[in-house]
Image 1 (cartoon, rainbow, N blue to C red):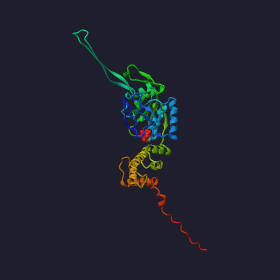
Image 2 (image 1 turned 90 degrees about the vertical axis):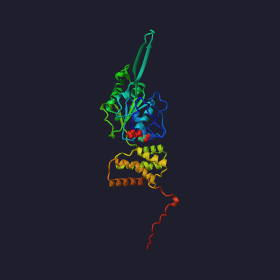
Image 3 (image 1 turned 90 degrees about the horizontal axis):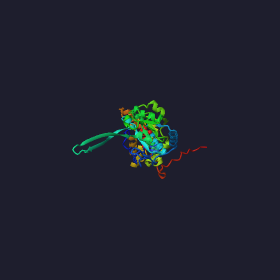
Image 4 (image 1 turned 45 degrees about the vertical axis):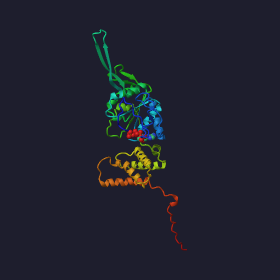
Length: 355
Ligand SMILES: Nc1ncnc2c1ncn2[C@@H]1O[C@H](COP(=O)(O)OP(=O)(O)OP(=O)(O)O)[C@@H](O)[C@H]1O
């Protein structure tokens, strides 16, 4: 998922149709400017694997624990988190982790000024002018979710600095959200009994992430999400790209074989399969080694993952290219010729048997 931070006071961006599904949510009738209302979304695939993870996640959430889906990039954590959030039937607030996110972005801050000007001419030749300007407190996403009992989905939370999350410790343990001194009227709020939180993180990410505090990690119910199984990858690719299942299967098997080869620096995920399937479907390419456009597409989508930007000598490049072409040939062979035009198979040579 992109790393841009939806600022706490800005409404979360709705998930666009046609764009990669970010989950089973749509901003339909927001009950608060920062909340999304869950709605089942077309193209969401619910395989046995998804059902199992959903049920296990809901088990923790229903018992009042914050849930954490942890797994490598492209394993479907965010989609799953939003799907599970939708099952809770409460409005959802989404936050994306970011190094620049601070406690105030989660909790709230003093915003804007409220001006008051009083002109008093009680005595006609004396003008008394009184001007006051007060800042007023604005709840941000975590406070809104705790106050209203919404579901908070905190995507890629380890991209935020650990100290940003100190405020969450009291939320999960004492069920109290302590507000900073500027909040004036209140120093804490009691967390609404329907408030729930779902986190996602990628433990393999090494750039732009922080370790999670032990105290927070200890409070989360963590479920590890692995790469989707073949059935799930196939179902998602067919549902999301409109490719026939047999064609989608070729692409899925190619990408899975490439993943199994270990011959890359950046893991080819379900996103790589979707990328190839979607472009091929749109361009009307044959899913075959025979179609140079398809071969070029596979090279563009996969080869860059083998080098991840560093310089490599020409021989190694050529070897890797050959290995990739061999995988394409193995998983996307030319279609079998139509029956009528099959080459006549020569009968086995007969031997004269001499008595
Ligand atoms: N159950 C599903 N149904 C339909 N599409 C899915 C499903 N699960 C995942 N996808 C698709 O797979 C892709 C990767 O999913 P997602 O963004 O949820 O993964 P992620 O683990 O959060 O990745 P990252 O860590 O890189 O953000 C997306 O395009 C998403 O729409």
